[in-house]
Length: 100
Image 1 (tube, rainbow, N blue to C red):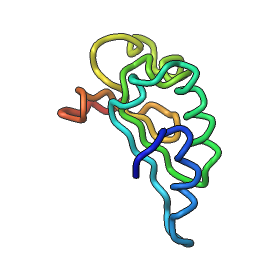
Image 2 (cartoon, rainbow, N blue to C red; image 1 turned 90 degrees about the vertical axis):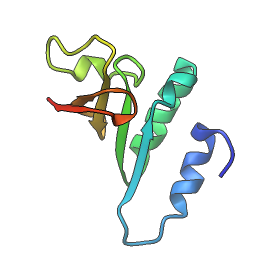
Image 3 (cartoon, rainbow, N blue to C red; image 1 turned 120 degrees about the horizontal axis):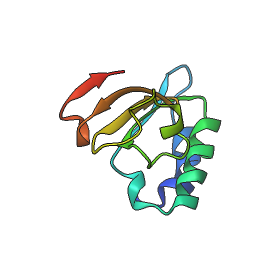
Image 4 (cartoon, rainbow, N blue to C red; image 1 turned 60 degrees about the vertical axis):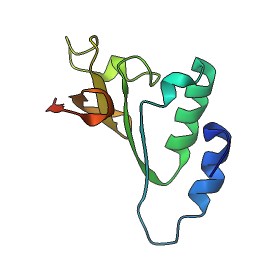
């Protein structure tokens, strides 16, 4: 599907069949959006009846760095999060994983 990821997400999610667990996953994509669009994306994805899995840079997903354990809020590694809760540090695109 082509289109703006923030604008198209609700309509795309609505196409999921009833009775399934909808999972929204993204890796290294939100950094290409301005902050305001990233904030709108977080509002949109958290309003869905879905499991949200993100794998982005530490400061890319608004509010995520503040939820990291002390000492984990910097560096080149990405943060793997489920529903906005950090669960691991990864190398870009998931090349390695270190559970928090």
